[in-house]
Image (tube, rainbow, N blue to C red; front, side, top):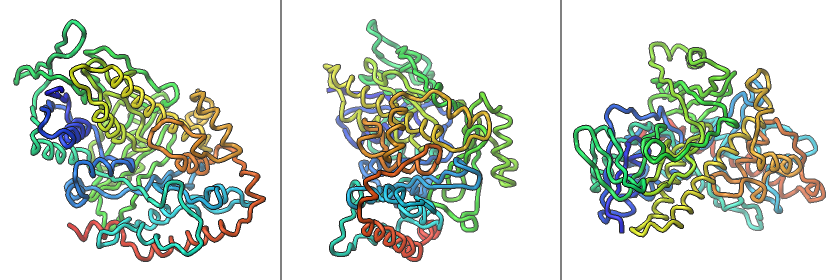
Length: 513
């Protein structure tokens, strides 16, 4: 077996990698993380994807262990504002759709003779919880899902994959990196604070060691590149090319602010908000004690100065005197994330804009697959090829899902938004959109490889964005709607009860401080 791993770069990706590998392999392999104290963590208030819960469970960390230390809050979905029209909003919830007589509740909603109201409000519970700033947990720590377990005799409705309500987190990325650093170091991971000044390779192009400015050479069997957009190992040293997504996803820049807020007065909505702007969108991520906010935009349509002015105006007086953090984003992926004995994780591997909070998800997926494909000294190429195939397909699938957001958005009030309707989209997505016009997305008509998103996510986007004409399934009009109508009434009653019984998210976290 291999004896040593060197992780180049700290931050969220470096310490998620080191902590996960140490939890998996214990002291059976040596792990070293080398990071510069001159490179700040890029994260500016991080939103996550629902699978992140499995990461913390794998590390054996309960929410009470890490959430207070990282100013973390709950995330039940994403609220999209102004993507369809000014003043309009809808939710993409972490909530699987209910099924009645073989059809999803959104199918039944669309099949009404004149669909009215909001699909997310009538087909899902999460929107009501977010609108009313409810916590997904009661003050005793129990999840609200347990309140829905009592089903009447003869009920036939279920969700596509059980009754689970996934949820995610918001947290301060720098604080989480520090927390995971302490976790990993306590379990034997070596921490070296220094600058990598040279990457040494043998005649085959395999990395033998990295040379640091003051601590000498760090040798290893496997090297993990967590150096961020630079791709110090995978791109600069190994020479693996980077494939851009910019042809289909033009946003390439961001400006961010960290805004201190009195959460008791403001409230703590359990969702990320994505508010459409003239050349992109603004994220709002509520942490405990501050807001992380930023404008993701395309430089072809907006200057950095205009973007900062737009963001400050959006935040209001609270933005006065706050330092803005300007970022240039590398959108796309390294063609192969694993080459020779080098594996790129995080931004060095690939990145799409943070519209669906997939940055942490990509890191988690990469390290999970690394453990499943971990090599020995024979370096079986089948493991490498399988890893690259899964990681590449995952990123390509997320790209396709994000392209849908822009293409399907009804907004078309300026050059930026008009161009989202004529810009090239992946051929596979174009074919799927044609299917969705006459039948809402389902498990057999969405991107077929694992990329974290299930059919209900696509359903929410095509219904919420409003830019694709949709027709209901004709067969539904021949079915008895009684059971579906009962489910709509039940869901509304459950929403009213949860709004009454659940505490506010602020109250939930304040009681543990």
